[in-house]
Image (cartoon, rainbow, N blue to C red; front, side):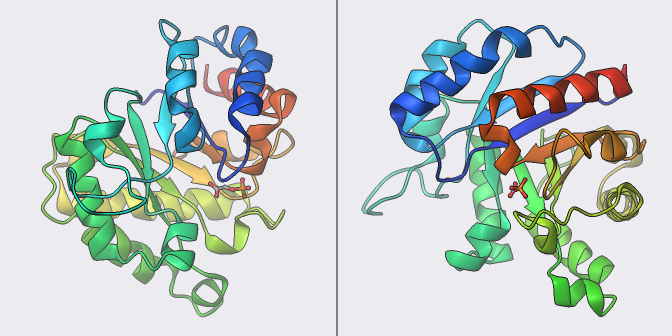
Length: 252
Ligand code: PGA
């Protein structure tokens, strides 16, 4: 059995004070949902304060990116070594990183390796563009991203995968449950082709892209979908709580 997981990707939102307030607004409710793992991914500047706030709770903390080198002259970057004392998870390969910061599959692969070496759990994002979807290339793109992203990575490593079709991110146009279920089924088949089957079947795969309290059940009802990576709705306390609550209900 794969434990359901809801992760919140806050993106470049919340000042230091706002982040603390947001967690305070959600914490009591969130720790009440024992059947669902919850992970919050605030901006770097809030990792330290939130790691203190969440210490001893069941709520996980994650970063939204990192560089693959351990340290050195890389102005503006943050390494796995710096993150590992503050959080357990790190989002890698998000389409916004690929699009705005020119991250390639090869760079994502290096980051995943560095994260795993440091003992962090990568939330590895993959997903096709609108054009690729329209021209029937979704499987080809997913297969390529998964195979290069996980190249050289052993089957024993802990990793979470998020399927996020680019056309669904921040657009309010989520995929349907059936569409997401199909793509995620394909990702799992791809994992089975590179790793031993039991291992591949134990990996959690999330859906991401315009997830809200209104559509979450459509996704988590799909047996292939183990939860969600939530962007916009994760910085609204009541909405995020509602997403976690409904996931707990469906998956219990
Ligand atoms: P969204 O973002 O929920 O705002 O569409 C999801 C994501 O980018 O992880």
